[in-house]
Length: 269
Ligand SMILES: O=C(O)CCC(=O)C(=O)O
Image 1 (cartoon, rainbow, N blue to C red):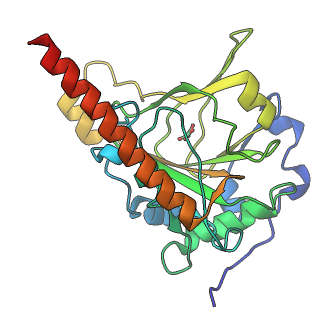
Image 2 (cartoon, rainbow, N blue to C red; image 1 turned 45 degrees about the horizontal axis):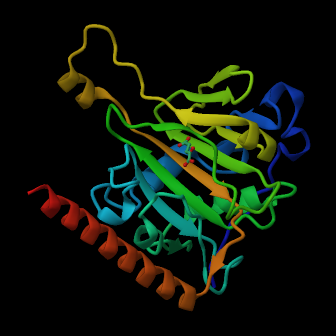
């Protein structure tokens, strides 16, 4: 039996207080990890030690290109006893990487799990079932402007993004007015991204600007990594049979794309 240490979240009542609102239905919560009963340093140590999918692994590429960040995938065995939550990105080839999604357990990641349970306790978040960890370890690591794809998400749910390690700017841009809000989430803070904000704004994590006069080599040596844990409620749950089928389809479509490329190459000669 797994032991899960659930603390009471002391900020429940004013978690979404006006002073924490950054725009629309989005909030920046300082010291979130601490308020959840966790220690950000210990959590960082655990997250940094998790097995990330190697960014050079073809299954994690996006439209054939390596991502500027590394990722790991977790899901909650209690909320998803059968099948795994599937969060698809159009254009991503990383189905097999997602198949490496690990069931969260107290043996593997007790601190992530405790935080996860606390996030499930936030009103309206009971079905939270999925976590993607992202590691920004190289100077140019970033994630470009995007809105989270909705098709596999439970409509209306919040997306909780916990920051650990170094600060990197998290930038929100309104798709119509082009208004920009730049947040600096610190070690242990969380941005709670509302459903409406995700629809109306893009978000991105920028590279940390290199100090003036510093060489690239030196910068690569001194820059500190940033990690994020992104908790979502996924409505698409793949049964083991469907996982098998999707893997076969991915393999088949990759084989046919490779064949077309090969034929095009030959046609040039
Ligand atoms: O790392 C972050 O803070 C944001 C991650 C993100 O936007 C995503 O994975 O969609």
